[in-house]
Image 1: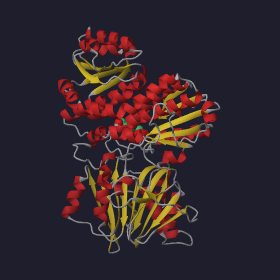
Image 2 (image 1 turned 60 degrees about the vertical axis):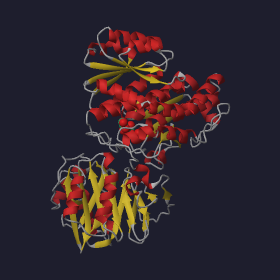
Image 3 (image 1 turned 90 degrees about the vertical axis):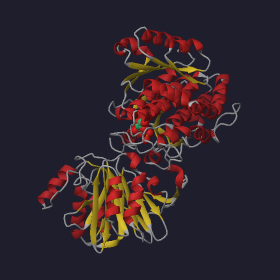
Image 4 (image 1 turned 180 degrees about the vertical axis):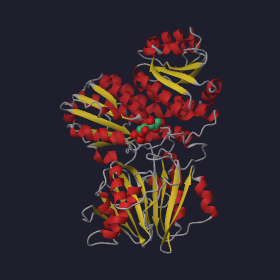
Length: 615
Ligand code: F6R
């Protein structure tokens, strides 16, 4: 999605914006631009394609100025082009605007502005904001020439989602920012301040930010920041201290962020368990949910909702919630939950799951479930994100920043957090055999060590990848609690290697997908021990009988299953209900190495964005 960075201070605004935009590169973009004010004029530079083009352009011709705004664009209205990239400039050339989000009524505003004589250079929705701001800057009753007043007036005409950063050539001492439904923070420095759509963009410069809320406006000068609502009422805000170090988002010696993040899983698992579970003989503690024991006992239904990888984690959550806590559970794709207008009975708990906490579909699903009377306890990674702020309770997965577009450590920790939640609910409700719960808690405590062991076996996964990476089609099969593992394995592979991959229940094989089986399609079968083990053997034999090559994800020492498969990826044996945690890591490594062998851009796969802030 688009990224915003802005700066006001005494250093080169263009350089600071550029560095910040580089830190947002992982989110995906197709063009970029920077505007500064210098000598009473706006100076705007735009490039199409990678930010390297902006590096080269600024190296050749610098853009001096100590106030500026920058943007990376991911096209929504109008193709990637210089005209469509931000910043967009008002017709009089005095006001520059960067924008994240979508202005839903831009068509009608565009027509109105055209009728008033404004000319448009781009096909974007954003350009209406540049012209509207000019219109109100020139003519706000009682306050012509007041940039903040003009911005506030202009956003009152808008419907949709936005985070704006706005500067004006007439006033090199003011940067104005405002948001509705799109993330925005103001970074606080000494004699200098920043704006960004993502804290990571400015973390190197400062660890203190104001998190801006919907319909709040920030007037930012070198000396300070004034926050108000749209009626001009001053707002007091505690600065939020970003809880991770400045280098947390750097690659740390790994070739790719995705690789680094796969390898961070043992430590991240320890962080996720810390303070919640330390002794299998004690009940676990899960703070932040804001649910009383009576509320947990009284639940009649749990609805998990999420997108993509987080949805797969939700499917594990659904399975465990029914299996352990004996609560009827559903898991819906967030984009579909609202579409089907679900019936929400009393005592329904909704659990939105999101790494970023900014995914628009998940946010909309949360609002819809709240409107229907459901309490919402979210499972999130990014602290103080939009979903966090609208939830009744939040359980954080404690993964630290995830930069690679393909989600890896967040998936494992979402699964771990949901396992904790299901065990906790089962303990409170008394619905599961205490011996089973003890066994699962002990297995969770062992999980960081298993993750370390799995990472030590990376070369074995690489060897399997080398054998199959040239094939263009694949099936990922699983059953029961490991059906989501298969679906997630397929998603991981397709999104970074572009190998066609389908995640399926092995039980569905005979109902269609078996028609695809042939020597040119490889199957990855998640075939660890558990209730569905024997059925998996049957499915693998059916594929072998049709000359389909099979890669088995198999428990250590399981020679029976090993003999069935063309290649084996061995995992330590753990209780079935926590096995999605051990199967995830090798599937992530398999996708990573296949994509790497094919020479793909793993951290920035084509067409994908890390945070999807539009529906
Ligand atoms: C895939 C991936 C996406 C996200 C999805 C939801 O690797 O990362 O499928 O899982 O866009 O994102 P969050 O978790 O931020 O809501």
